Length: 273
Image (tube, rainbow, N blue to C red; front, side):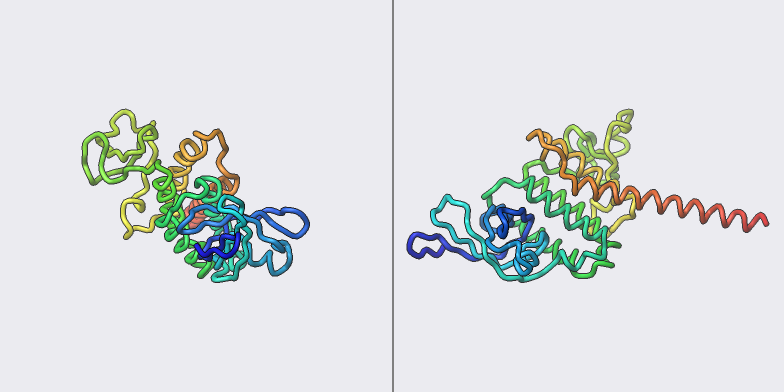
């Protein structure tokens, strides 16, 4: 940290997670950094046209933190390194993914605790989401689900998806115990399988990207543990942005199934005629 006079100044790359109005022209901004984790600060002029564009959730900025004392809320200034949010304005699903990631990080992570691995993972994810909105809408969901698993692990609620909690098998894993967060095989599940959570295969290997049904199952899996452990233990609800993402994907899956059923009926009618 560089010190000058009575101020404490430093610079670091930061991921903008949220910005809330604070007076007429300023904003309370939450950013994620590698060294200090979640940081709350004040950005003066953040409601101007230039400031609003800079402090958009999803952006990567070179932030400068200026504090009068070591424990005070820092004043933030910055310059844009990578703009994610504005790239996704015409891609509603991709925008929903980005908003969910930012809100989860903002509300689940403790303030001031370093999280270098999660910072790197989040930076990589946001860069991917903003690179090609059309590609993100087709292939972004498995990356989001894997990031949510990483978030759970960083919070101390990581799932064990490497071996069956009952048989010890490392293959044939198809369920997760809602009680322990451990994977279970069909054999290990036995008569209890109706009480277990489906484990989509794409979470067991990087070679399998999965299907829309798999991605929805993945969101429901991570969502269960986020709601119960990351938020429920603090008596807080799941963030609305995360619920909207899952609801949007559920509607898309339902529409896909309805379209497939309609196509099958049309093909059958054509054969009969």
